[in-house]
Length: 187
Picture (tube, rainbow, N blue to C red):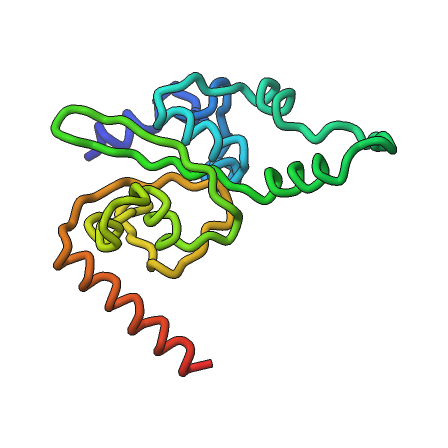
């Protein structure tokens, strides 16, 4: 044990920061700084891009792409329709659904209105001509956590697609309906 203590004491390695695997050129000094970095929109954007197999952005590139433009006076001739369309786009969120089958992985990006429920997203993923139960055949998860069918999507999200079958899908929906009733009764 003296050798180990001596080895540690004489180690010339300086402590290194924590490098982010999603954000190029980012290194934090400690765990707390890294946790704060992980909650930034820049990190979340790069994480989604990396999952999609696309190029990630440095902080400068991200700010150049997404920084709000300086306030300008809108031209008077801008139509009400253009304003409504811009407001609708601002209220839309992007949902990336990742599909895996055997060794393959692919994804699809859905644009849905902010506040859409998980169940409404699932229904939008199914062809309109398909049986109504098709939305119950699969589950969506954030990592290992399955959100309720009634949870709302208020920001850009990434979900993993899991086929569960009709019986399991009905069971999950019934469980979510029961929890929602219990929550409403509690209020």
